Length: 436
Image 1 (tube, rainbow, N blue to C red):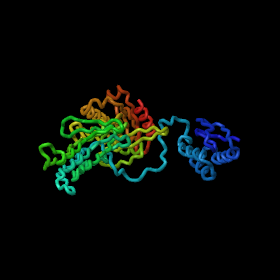
Image 2: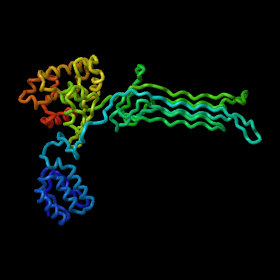
Image 3: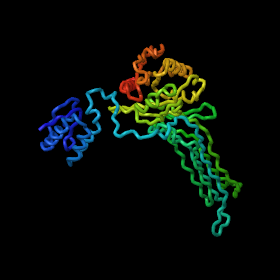
């Protein structure tokens, strides 16, 4: 007894793999009864030409099988988008989402720069005390030492992508004071703060000292706690048997740092305000940035992830709009241009529905060169958006790429982020650009 499979792995009831092929093949099953049933189901669903998900749900609902077949049906459901599609390269195809996008806009914003104040814990004070025992009311000094204050420690964590949850003021606990009967105060625990890998910790005082945490698990002591003070028993000497002094605990360090993410995304969307960058991010990923018809709708970066069918992913950042004169800090230019330095590849988004869109592209290149000439040496791509409004227009003739982009053979992709036209070609070029 035999059945036909296509583009999928087939498992026996005990989980043994029987066959895998990218074309329809004939596979022999070990169980005749199971084989007959599967053939019947294949005939019902027209040899898998109907929905793979529908087939798997029917098989799981009609049979009480062991884990081997259940695992097989789950694999079929997961790969339904690949199985029911033509034999094309899955590297450049988007992954089919399992559930619809949530309604509304993203509530939490991505934060890649933050100024924080770190305060180490104070040390505990030493104690002045004298021991009194039965039949010995003057047993000597017994003041204990104070405990040490806690440090503020930054630890790199590769699972984090934003500084949004880092508090503005970080204060470690103080050590306990010393007590009588030679009891020392407990030292305070250190205050650990997890930050994303690739974060630069820079002192705001302008000393130029900075530390970058590049690997997972690396730590940096931002503010040290104060040392505990000594009690009066620590001052006993041959000439001073009853000291009446004790040390106060040391003060913890109080330092202000600038935390800055060095790298935020693989691809950064760069363009003027209202050219459709947020709409494009919605079309490429499941991110939900706010979309409106007024300038500077986006004032903080939004991060989206392009999920490909083969499991590869690319992070894309929707950056705030750049205006002419941004290199002179016009329109929060420094704050917005700073985000571009943290993207590996650059994607210039141009609105072709306006008059002379070539000026937009030239202005963007000029602002980047005046801000940081090294940015122009990164991998680039030009996206001509809103071609549904400017129908019948030759994008290459309209933009007339400057000499810099022509020399680097920068591709120009015509899309409509609203209707989805040209998104497939853009996703393919982004994958190729990131893999260069």
